[in-house]
Amino acid sequence: MNKSLLPSVWRFIGLVAVQGLLLHQVGSAVNEYFNVLLYPLFILFLPIQISTTVAVLLGALIGMAVDMFYASPGVHASAGAFSGMARSVILAGFKPKGGYSGKEPIPAPEYFGWPWFLQVSGVFFAVHLFWYFSVNAFSFVYFTTITAKTLAALALTMIFVVLYCILFNPKN
Image (cartoon, rainbow, N blue to C red; front, side):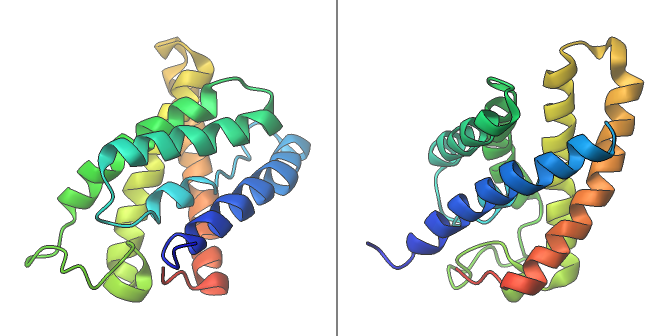
């Protein structure tokens, strides 16, 4: 197996397991505003040079895997696919002055620093979470609730994103 592919495979398996077996159970036990969606890190940590089409397909795939734990057919798959599409736009918006050199395989703090990573991941997760809660509610009548859930989940998720990056130090 390709060495650059192996970290992504392990990340996929690990994040789906943590999301489905741990974070879903904790969120269900606490309340409806306690949502931590960590699995989009798989989409964010895909190689920078990957095509948008592949990112969308992989985003839908990890979303379908998470949907099996949540019994929410298609909601996470939709959010994952949308995040795969939004990822390229977000990375283009935060592109360094000289562009991406190719020396940095993934958008991680190891290569770009924490301030850049926190901005990119904050925007990425805000977009993902807003889409997820919008599709979950299936109506903009609940815009206030969708926004409140998005902001609460964003704050909680970013704490877990930072902890994940400190503990696992993604480099590939």
